[in-house]
Image (cartoon, rainbow, N blue to C red; front, top):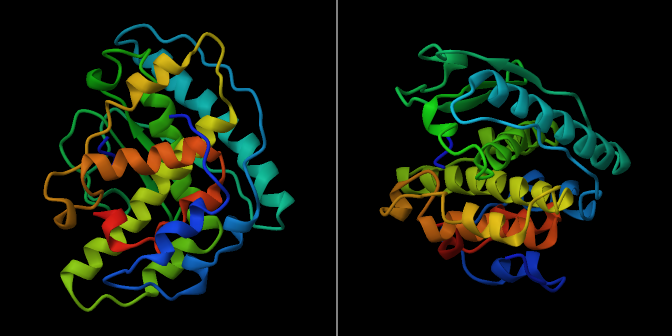
Length: 256
């Protein structure tokens, strides 16, 4: 599920893409005008990264748990402050996530993570590929991006996504990309809210941005091209504001 610049953007960032055309316009208000987009930037907090040695599964799991605790603190403050629903997420670590877990299409990847909306649970299967270089911020952003599915569930985005019609496969894939790319952007916004992390520099973030990989097929994938995927992560990090992550109002060209 996860395939896994700093900069200054003007207040018009969130609306720029909306001014362009969308092949399949989304009209559901919970998607294009969700109150989450008006709640402002995420609160600035601190988040300590536990040490993770190479290929140490126990430490990697403890790292994920610590990041989730930071996410809970940030999102609880943000959502309740905006009068939006909040409920903590559950976390399960598994050596192997069962096929069809929660009705999802679990694959044979060594490392993967899934969000079960029915039980509001994040399931993590951390393999050697995710702990080969534990210093690369991959686990941090992956956890933050996956938690964003929980946020979508809490604020009604997931329910709205489930009911919007898409009569063609092409339209369905585009809406999949809008949902998934939004989580990547929200993950970037969270990282910005706790940045700089102790011992980290812009060099660490720039290196991380070379890691997420999309699909060359673009419109035929669930995450879009690599450049698209990275651009939404950068967008969230640039502002730290969920309002910049309104993929539902973006032009089709922005979610290819």
